[in-house]
Amino acid sequence: MFNTKSKKEEPVIISPSFQLPIILIVL
Image 1 (cartoon, rainbow, N blue to C red):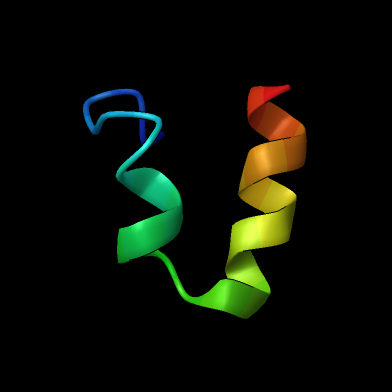
Image 2 (cartoon, rainbow, N blue to C red):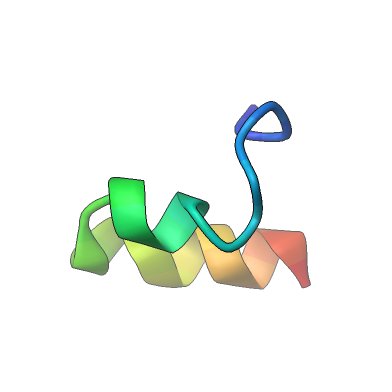
């Protein structure tokens, strides 16, 4: 979904609470 964005920028753009699920998905 967020592959278009840089992985380093994802957590910055996404809310902190939603940041954890995204990081887990990326990993």
